[in-house]
Amino acid sequence: MDKLVARYKVLNGDSYEIGKNEGEAMSKFPKGLNAFTNGAKLFSKAEKKDMTNLFQTYCPGLNEEIEGFADAVKIDKFNILYYALTYLKPACSQFALLPEMTSDGHILVARSYEFSHETEEMLLLKTKVSNKYAHLGTGILQFGRTEGINEHGLAVSQTSAGFPVGNFGQMRKPAITGLQFWAVIRALLENCKSVNEALDYVKDMPIAYNINLLLADKAGNAALFETLDGRKSFKFIDANTERKYIYSTNHIHIDELSCIEPMAMHNSVHRYKSIEKFITNKKLNRVQIQEFLGKKYPEGLCCYYYDEFFGTIKSIVIDVTLGELDICWSGNTSKGWKTFKVSEDHSDMEWQVDLISETAPENFFKMIKQ
Image 1 (cartoon, rainbow, N blue to C red):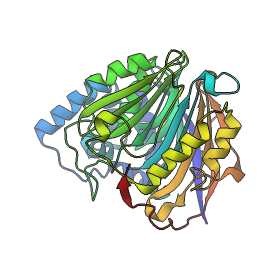
Image 2: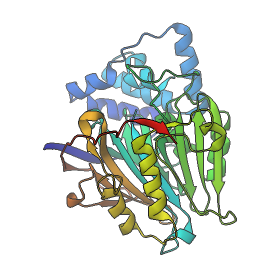
Image 3: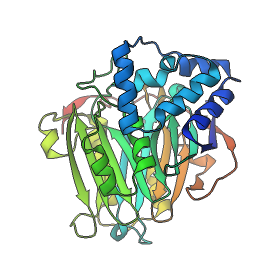
Image 4: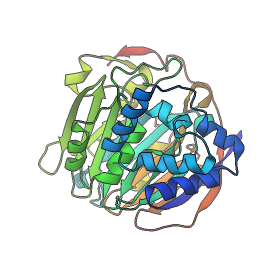
């Protein structure tokens, strides 16, 4: 059994101030600092200019935050790993339920995130950048976000659409020059108030990662936005659509794109069917959803295959109506769920997380037709 530490932290100030404060804090932990500042990639002058312009256009404030961090730790900002991994990993499940599908009439978003615990920061952040929308969400590579909800009630989550895209190792190579999902999600949380604004924001955004982006807002709108090698498509639901729920696992789901890439991992297809079975013809509440997220695969969504990069890092339920985020780290429900409000600055905290690793069942990663 591994013992990990999860944290909650509030970030407040303008972009440069937040980055500088985070850099000063990170300087006290040389091992962690090295992990963030070993860029492992040399950029040409043209690439640096293009990257800076790309971030400035679609992720305003990010360049300044990274610059503040770099100034604090006294390195060139392009040596920060975030640039190498974002300028262009994980498996997940997610779904959104409109009021007609919940017992209290609230809009709920659920999300399970699987990868390796050795690469995770296990950090929940309340971020309030000057002149941007405050948001609550988990961090990745210090500057990115993997999901969250902002002060106006826009919730954003994601799953990888097929084999992960990236610049390293055996990852699928990017088909276009563009952004990783963690940059996209933070940009939406900080700059959009509704699903419609978010869909408009990503319409022309260059996204290199193949992503299933789940969006929901407190007005009762939700959408699944998918990208595949630069192609884009989306499904939208609201009070006027027949379907009142939307969900995804780790393959392409929209017909317009799935016909191009019809293959999926066996576990992704199984999780997709499990979600469908769980949410169909029911009115669900947060506790029932938490129990489903914490139930072990194949009955539920929780996986313990950390050595195979498929262990549950976090399970999350977002009550969009109330602006609350429930989180359980490592699928260990015995430690309980913790609730945070986007409208409140909770005190900085950390807590121990126990993690048990198992071996994935046979055929778990086998590729099959959807």
